[in-house]
Image 1 (cartoon, one colour):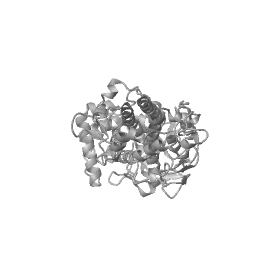
Image 2 (image 1 turned 120 degrees about the vertical axis):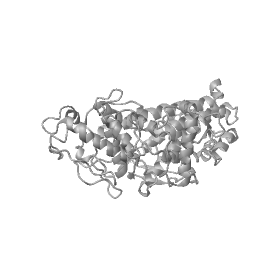
Image 3 (image 1 turned 45 degrees about the horizontal axis):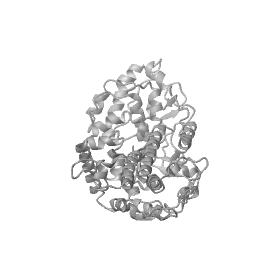
Image 4 (image 1 turned 90 degrees about the vertical axis):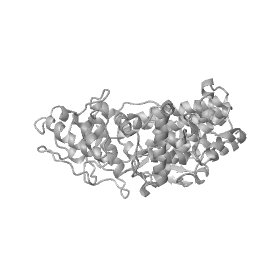
Length: 498
């Protein structure tokens, strides 16, 4: 997951382009009377970001970026945002105060224990599972916008607090506002694809590989280790192996960064027809820029100078996602049918894909997916070299599907094109523990385990599942589980808390 402040920034930047995008869609041949959307344009032109009302209180308002940031990390669905309005208000107040101050150093997250608990089963933020959620929510949002265009909103939808809070009675308005709110919830998962720590972690597949059911294999004492770490949190249960190793992989890739390309070849961005060049609430991608390779940082690295291209791509992808909702509202059509013939003079296939340099082949279901990064191949074996913005070779991963990442990425690409999930990886190799801990100042180095050959290619460079359960004649599994793993959790807890 990007950090919450980064999710807010991504959502608010992209949604700040909405008035210009909507005017452009309406002005196209066969478009609409832009005055039909005056209420929506006014909402998104206001700088107070009072866009979506979620509760009865006077201050219970959220922006597109707020909804994007809260979904998944804090709340499992939109209903929970309003059902827990008091916590929502506290969360948004804390984050926006920190953003206004320009520093998150003193941020006191009022719901951090719950967030950490959810992180123990957060596979919807990675790979196929993230794509599944985004496609489902995006299509639901498109359907809402189309029903608003066709005056088919339900009574419950017309009475929704987000509609009533803005004092609007138009079905067209209600359909678009509810569609945008729903889409913001889904765009959290799309924006996660632009954080390096989410690109090489097949989170659920690895969880299953280590025997995951509801929690997976847990290690006694890890709850205490996380709780007792400086600034630690009480998650109420021991952590499972897959979640912690996935977390370390996520943090390592995010810290060191990954060099990437696109799944669908080079992309040439046109600034959404010049719209994205309009000053918004953050950086905008430069128009007419052809992009082939780029460097991506992870969580807490969005504003890193070396992450500029990936940052722009994240803004642009969310902008394209929002544009899909606007097209659906204006035309009454799902933008994915731009792959065929609409029988409508507006947004013909070539026009839809111009924003990303033309229609790629094979073709993803929606234009935003053409910008999802695909990491370059890693080093063939472990070395001390880490990825950096001056080299295009990525460091050797902590977790690696048996046979490498190419099949995994090819399957993800196919998923983007036809919404079918091909066979997922079911076996993994895991880098020896001596290579796993990211060196964090003040946390300390790994504690060596006595005995064993930890060099790449050795029998100890290992079938991790067998190693955990049997240990063999190298290092008894009980010793590793009882001593080293708990120490690793203590360091990990301190790192995450810091």
